[in-house]
Amino acid sequence: MKKHKFPTAQTILLIIAAFVALLTWIVPSGKYDTLSYNSAENIFTRNGLEKTIPLPATQETLNSLNIKIPLEKFTSGDIWKPINIPGTYKKLDPKPQGVIAFIKSPIKGIIEAADIIFLVLVIGGLIGIMNLTGAFDAGIAWMAKALKGREFILIIAVTFLVAVGGTTFGLAEETIAFYPILIPIFLAAKYDAMVALASIYIGSSIGTMCSTINPFSVIIASDAAGINWTSGLVGRIIMFTLGTLICVLYILFYAKRVKKDPSKSIIFSQKEEIENHFGNTTHSTIKLTGRLRLIIFLFSISFVIMVYGVALLGWRFNEMTSVFLVGSIIIGIIGRIKESVFVDTFVKGASDLLGVALIIGIARGITVLMNDGLISDTMLYYASNMTNGMNKGLFINAMLYIYGGLSFFIPSSSGMAVLTMPIMSPLADGVGIGREAIVNAYNYGMGLFAFISPTGLILASLAIVKVGYDKWLKFVMPLVMILLIFTMIALTISVYI
Image 1 (tube, rainbow, N blue to C red):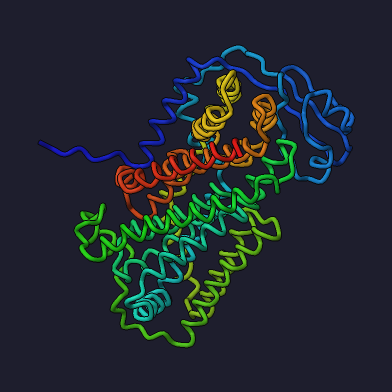
Image 2 (cartoon, rainbow, N blue to C red):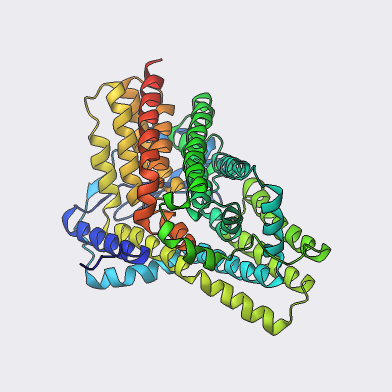
């Protein structure tokens, strides 16, 4: 009997897109009115179904709309996206998305996600240039010798540092840059590619799940809920510490088993293929010269500059992409690469990640279908009504699952915050718990689902590592269940103490 192969990431996303298009024929269309702040004119703008109404930028305006958010959150720029206005949901005429809309959705998604797609392609070009210089081979061979017998340090360091980036400034999409660099290092340390993938992706996921000072999730969500972001901070720090510890121990357990017996690897059947793709640099004969050390330093400093810019200067994808492009050119000059060879190598490196870029675009196309079909707000409306009459323990855990489900349709953390918090956070008042509990449920629900969500970053990450989604689920689901139970217990305790 012929064995059926699990579908590729692109096919999985197209199937999901078809399902979402079908939902637009079943789920009623509807929309909330939104409120946005115009800093140039110092006014609010209420965007309704039929007209746009300018309103005074005062606290009285916010109170009259039942928005319990201090005015300064808008005027300071903390809330820069339109927020949903509670109690304004209205059903609309259906806008089902047919075959033509389904076909167009990946194209629209690629256009909308152009900023991150160009980042991915430029990173691919940079990796190609680095490989041509030989700096990777020499550096990885050196590191493999330096860590011999202490390879577990690599897992702890990578997972923890990426988790810190996630909890502080929302390190997520940027981790795509790390896979081509770190996977050869993990392979040289006699681990499989799954360990590298887990250290980076799980590190990022647990960090963003337990965001402490992340401006793109916990701070904007707290602002939209009308509370100070420091409310509930101690609990989130405890969650981050314990959650990261659980993840590190889980990865170490698997890594130790694979190192002892490579046949225990979930991706053992792909071992030779992956090693050939990323290169076996353990026995590299290239000497780590002063020139190659300088190239590695410049390569590393590009990432330091990126992290600094994102964390402290408010950089987004345009600035990050520019850093890696300039870094590629400087490395090419120091490596004495001819101009024609540089261009050919850069283009080839970018083409190696073209499949990843397409996955990102197709995933964004799913969001386009939901927005065009006007079903996102309907999902939110019915979700907010599901919790009526619940006690606070059941209520907060229901919110965890609701946010996990909603994140399938709204994978953006900042988008989820401004769209849902004005609707969801007042529900806490009726149950008798603090609004920070809703912020935590939002954080943990979105974060937990991000471990496996096909509309998030996992499929793009898997495409780089050449690992199937089915293999990832087999690896990560036990950890997700452990974290889910841990999170439910923590949330329940938090609303009763």
